[in-house]
Image (cartoon, rainbow, N blue to C red; front, side, top):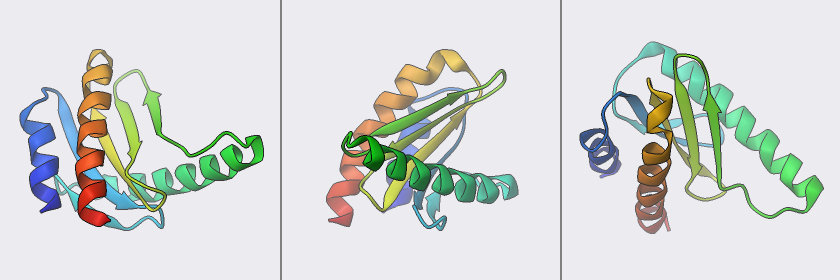
Length: 116
């Protein structure tokens, strides 16, 4: 069920390396590609999400929506589904960031409806 949602993102976007649905405890629920290095990325992303939740609570700024990390060779977008789950997209081109953010936002709403 979640794999279909993730596959739809891949079908609509060039340069996508992986899309992952994961829990904030670092456990992968579903992913597009089976790459060993992504497991460590999920754990690190979950740590970042938890740290950002705490930071947001200190600021009294509300709930975390998304994070974007743009590097020289890759861009990583993390879109929260709810407080316990997030979608993470990894693409090779920074110029696709807007499209990736949009697609992950749409799919996060679909995931949210399934989870709730």
